[in-house]
Length: 223
Ligand SMILES: Nc1ncnc2c1ncn2[C@@H]1O[C@H](COP(=O)(O)OP(=O)(O)OP(=O)(O)O)[C@@H](O)[C@H]1O
Ligand SMILES: [Mg+2]
Image (tube, rainbow, N blue to C red; front, side, top):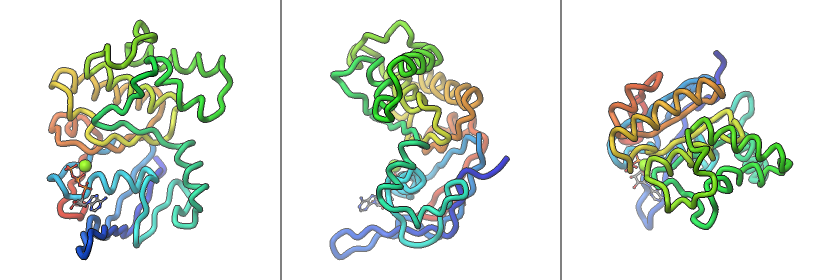
């Protein structure tokens, strides 16, 4: 399998007042297409920082990052936004659904932003909602759903454009263990069906065990 992401000696420092926080120290990471990779590590070790860089949401100070064959450091802000829109889906622990939009509208939204025609939007949205087992909930508002159902909506939204890469930051943190297991299995199934690559930060031992591999982040260093 070829590499989707190749990070070489990536470092990232945050400036907080007079303090410098070295959040990432010369991180090397290769993620192959279709792989489910879990990042584990203590709070503050740098997992979210690494995910945000991989997800083209944040800059790095040193090193190189190739997304497929593209050298990310040569990208303008506009190119980065475009690249992110075309290639990435995100799942966060707080679900981040839009409360005034129905389940259908939340999931359809990335397609609307991408300018996909209405009929195709409808087909793709219904197909992915079917996949996550929420076909009957299309007209519901998010606050009428359970935590697990909300997270499944968030996963459907992340996957509706069939992006090559989905970044998930603690996707099961707010879920009970049965629901968490269901969400993990779902990512597995969708990963296989859609050919999606997943990069997941998690404290959940069982989630990590179900990924293809687990990497440890400790004090900004990836092991
Ligand atoms: N925007 C920011 N400004 C300044 N420092 C930051 C910022 N974001 C993160 N940090 C610092 O960078 C380090 C790594 O933080 P990060 O959020 O990546 O950790 P994490 O492994 O995701 O932790 P958690 O498991 O608690 O989510 C921490 O010391 C944190 O305080
Ligand atoms: Mg984090």
